[in-house]
Length: 293
Image 1 (cartoon, rainbow, N blue to C red):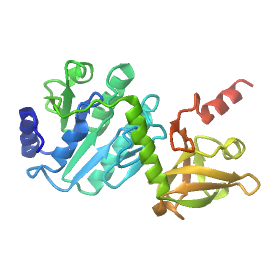
Image 2 (cartoon, rainbow, N blue to C red; image 1 turned 90 degrees about the vertical axis):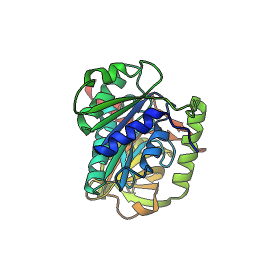
Image 3 (cartoon, rainbow, N blue to C red; image 1 turned 135 degrees about the vertical axis):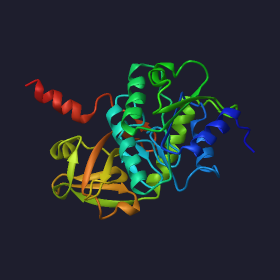
């Protein structure tokens, strides 16, 4: 049985008395996932519960690159929120909208452990403004969350509560996090199927079709979207035929035959499913080359 800090129990009682969206903030390995899991199973909190994981590098039930809700996804295209603030914020908002459309009684939003600089503060505060949560729970070891939460202190909305870090929180090394993502990629793409996608029949963002056909490499990862622009998950480029303008993608089985739009991500996967971050995205290189002419 998990030993829980008493402030966690008091926070759950407050949320039960006045339920609404809950945003959980905290540095890496502060116990955010533990707190979210405990709240999701709490007998006194509303049902159904919809959990949004807005950390694209989590690498647990879904691979890095995606942020996910209980039944939905949004493609960020990177394993880190750094440099991808807009995608992370938009993804979290769209997933919360999915939770509301599913009439969730409780929406719990997990976040990345990135809290220590100006861009991290901007992302956390953007999530507060975009998601308009009723509750913001800050798991803090010291004053690391003050720059984010101090402006909201004392407001009726959102209601900010500082909570102690669980004694069960375990610090993971960057290597351990990378291994978790690698295992998630291997399981995710290993369970998929090969799908041929004709570029003339789908939209493509992040790179032009001609550039992708000339520069595409196995291991590139793309977001998959259906005809209603809902994210179907992520696909991995396995091969291409320039003359036919066709891509061979490893995709989730449920996405087969439904892909209507692709978005090129920033991550490439090696043969052993390790993720590699290019120095610059192909889209950025193409744009700068055009501007330099």
